[in-house]
Length: 236
Length: 236
DNA sequence: CGCCTGGTTGACCAGAGTCAAACCTCGTGG
DNA sequence: CCACGAGGTTTGACTCTGGTCAACCAGGCG
Image 1: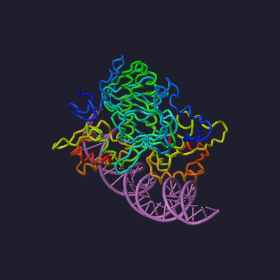
Image 2 (image 1 turned 30 degrees about the vertical axis):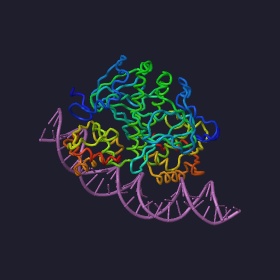
Image 3 (image 1 turned 60 degrees about the vertical axis):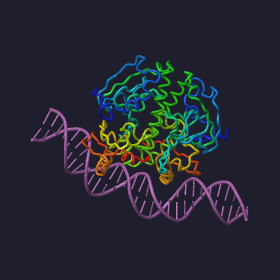
């Protein structure tokens, strides 16, 4: 279904199965009578400070969570993929704003319903573990990586099964290129990576100049050598 | 028991109850036959890459989790307090190193034991939610705050019931000072805040010069006006 | 007493931020 | 069909925060 664009483009997406956290472990949250909502691109699902009652499972599309400082500085704290859970809060209010990056479908669930099912509880725990790990990874990026390393890491994050633990290098002899479609604007990328829009733009231009990527359109990027890009993420 | 020093010093600690996540919701993890381990200061509980089988609940003391980049850059991704859970991993290996900052006691628990108890499952979920929220907060700090703001936020984090949501300002008319004991070295603080040791040191000196804090010993800091400090955390 | 570790300070430098202008791309309307 | 405008993006010139490197200091311990 073309209307649900995914960060990485195109045909059957090999990452899909991977990125959906524990696809079928103990049933789906949707099974327990969750309401499903559809959103357009750049719709707000909830605002920081809104009363938090339910939690959400992203069924399709991409959603970002961000927080604002009073002077307007913004930090995107998570970029979510299908299968991810969000909207939990220990207090009565959401601590961040949730906004879609693409058209998206979201299951709205009552936490108590989950707590009644051991299987779903288990699934929830696994989801949270995975997301927590991503947050740790992101803390390293924000705290210790240079601008180029941040952008390179970001691009690698959009390539299925490469970088990180599951990276097996380029397929033997294959040309190791990759086409990807960005669903985030430069500003959103900047706010995710803790940079300014100008720096993000400059790094893209620099990577282009160095022959590592090709920019077909602002949101259409071709990675010439995935491995070469991975080399500059700081994790090698 | 004096041997268990807590980040904030002294007598009966008003924060204690607050910081222990969901103190008695649905029983304690310790109840289900968890082994308890004692550690000295700066002991490693597990290393990044170690096989991950169990999960841990911090019973007393302080523990930090950090990740290393191959070139030696380090990022402390979490500073844990009693009640916090750590050591979960989606994969078979720990994704970060856990090291004590003080003497500490830790319950080692089998995840499957928890999964058998709905009450503990629920408690676990709450813990993870709280920690996740802290990680979001920290992402804002790392991605968007200046050096002074980071250090100020860090110090405020050590003051019970101040800053953040639960802040009710200074008690009416009270002098609003606070004494705190640092359990982290300058290097550890720097690695937590995404700064260098020199910058941390300089900011401390600067806050001293501005009369906001008094440094009695490297690890013994007096906040002259908590509210004044809170003012420069960036969240006001 | 002197070493060793951790912390502080200074001089200098570089990476990223700021401010401002120019540039695409795409949709709208004349 | 093309001119126009808006939004997002790129580029340049300059600034400044925080990093680097190196020397120095203070307290604790053998």
